[in-house]
Length: 260
Image (cartoon, rainbow, N blue to C red; front, side, top):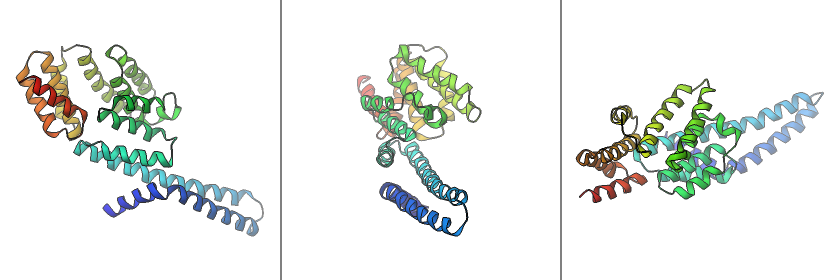
């Protein structure tokens, strides 16, 4: 519901940290009262930590729910700005968050702000938590691959493949996404053989407007490389029409101008 989403945003953005201190204070009062009413300190202390951790878990669940809402919005509008603003709002409350730092870098990359994106993503390099979050992990290796030169980009995808093999939950989804990323890298490296059918299949299975725009752009690039400008222009026009604030929209428009 819209009112629920608005409440979540307002609470997390404005009051989550203050609420944590209030919650902690109430927990300490409860702990003091429990110690007076019960013999021993083990049970009151256990209840206190359940109280504190419960608050943290609720905030985490609500924040991730809003992240998914913002991601779905991006997928249908091709506008990364609202998700970027959300991530930065959460990071002001929790600067050490790995997940929201990765999503921040992802949004910056989509907007074409590559230097900022790389600087942001480098902040989480080497963190163990990164490899425990499949969504963050996949975005991270895909973004680092896109931000690397074609000769070294494959190293990031190989890291992703090795890590995916060690996962049980979500492994097939990760491996599928990495295979699709490999198609884009192959095109960047100048390879074209076998890409047309594979990319068209990805376009047909694309689950959102953002992904359809992305695959139309890749196909436009592929057909330009194959010397088929009319087919390239057809795909690039789709990107120019529906790409909204994605950086590839501007690139598609430039390529269309060059083709005239």
